[in-house]
Length: 402
Figure 1 (cartoon, helix red, strand yellow):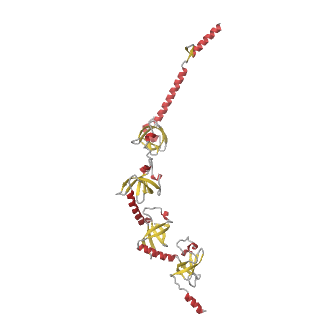
Figure 2 (figure 1 turned 90 degrees about the horizontal axis):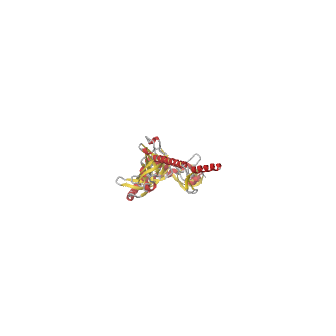
Figure 3 (figure 1 turned 180 degrees about the vertical axis):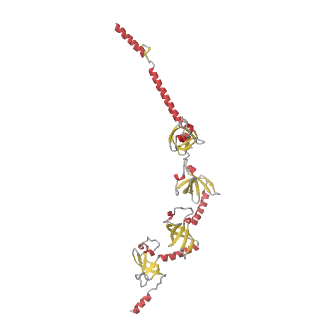
């Protein structure tokens, strides 16, 4: 029996910690995987030694009967089993893949899993890698959380297997791609052409729009025919916008864009919409010492001169009006060529007084006419009502005497 046992033990594989061996999956549960290693003891892969992804389920990771390579951690885990790891084998292979890519300047695929101070943590070929914040994009990006959970192509810019160090970058790949896009865009650019782009930056003076390889400036004055106080009223970073090219400086790589030129100019038919004497409503949009500007419609402002605000002396427009006030005005003149409309509040007051005066005079006239003797025709003679009463009275007295 002793000889028989010795023969069986000789036929068994001999393992040592650190060895990489092959086993067959015998059983799987929620916490571990059991392997047949061809050894006197079974191999056990704990869940945490399956993958770097703690959320993975062993049942979703392996199947019974599947052959798998593992790394021997201990020959006895305390319960007579061999403690083994699959993720360490994957890591060893992963380091080989990254080293080969680093030496040959090849790109690798990285899945970003978390945000840390100064950058992001991702996994490539099972290896934990670091991506500095300055290398996740070709633009400054304050919010790094938007990259978590996504997979990207990247380059290895620093590698040290002994220190378990792998630093990746997307920046150079993105810059190379943008250069290709820029060349194609420069060939296509011309004044008057429309493009669809994405807002990348918002400034007080306008927004920058990525046209695909290059950014163009959409100045605040070119966003709308109406008045805009701040570009953030209309746009947010990431918004898609259709714009028209109004100027190109290829040497300095500058592109000027317009949004308002894609819509009809409200001044084009201004003379058909507003005429002298028209009474219209508008909103006060600007106060100056010499008057106020009133928005009649988006892109169309008229001026109420300080002398046209009231029939009484007004020292400063701000004494009687405020920005945002809705007022009724009369059109004094329309200058289509110079884009100027003169308005008046005083004219409405004077018109109202004139109307009241005319109404009063008309009333007096009617009253006066009512007081004048009215003539009637009696036997083809014109007599007044008083004559009739007098004649009637005389006849009455004659009849009494009779």
